[in-house]
Amino acid sequence: MTLVATHNCVQAQAVSSLSEASFARVDLGDFKIDATEVSIGRFAQYANRKNLITAAEREGGGFEYVLGWQRRAGWTWRAPFGKQGTALEPAVHLNWAEAQAFCLDAEGRLPTKAQWQQAAYTERRTSPPAPFVKGKTYPYPTGDTPEGANVEGSADGWPRHAPVGHTRAGVNGLYDMGANVWEWLADAQEGARLTAGGSWWYGSSMMKVDGMQYKPSELYVVYVGFRCVYQ
Ligand SMILES: [Ca+2]
Image 1 (cartoon, helix red, strand yellow):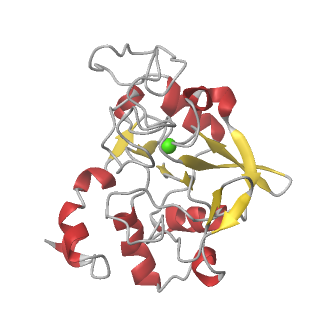
Image 2 (spheres, helix red, strand yellow; image 1 turned 60 degrees about the vertical axis):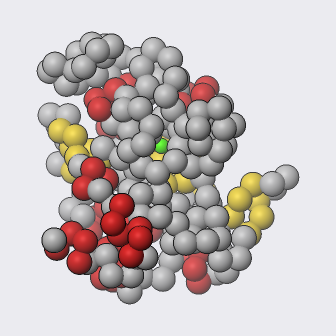
């Protein structure tokens, strides 16, 4: 199967668990969007083809926040917490330009705020499964409540990030638009780029639309990943 054959630099064990679900796109009419955050396995295909060395790899490792930003040696998109990640974990420790370059290579782009907001909160499917209602706008990407998302703490089953597509599907059948990892958006403001959805490090309030935050576009940290949109 060609999909698996191209994952030559991912551990054999990880390759076998890279499901095609992490490549799925949802058609929202005006645009399509990845059903999940971009996974390590998917990013590996691209990075290996491009012989890509990311800023986190070049500069000594990505960051986590412990009473301030602290660099962690060896923490990269391949090894989000310092040891090899599995193929379905979200790709993190990537700055805005690295995320956008991936999407452009896939013939897409990072979502605009308007696109991401529409996808995350307003149900567009013709016949969505219960409890979702076509045309309804929800406060959370999970629906009326944040239940089912991977937020702070381990009560949700995930003390840190979850593999993509493993939490409960939310509005428009999308996974982890709320929490798991923040997602880079296209919108810029004085050297910063917007991020949306919150993460496993935050509570559920950051999943709401007003939880979006601008972050320095050069930032590469364990809490921020991305997904792409396609025309
Ligand atoms: Ca997310």
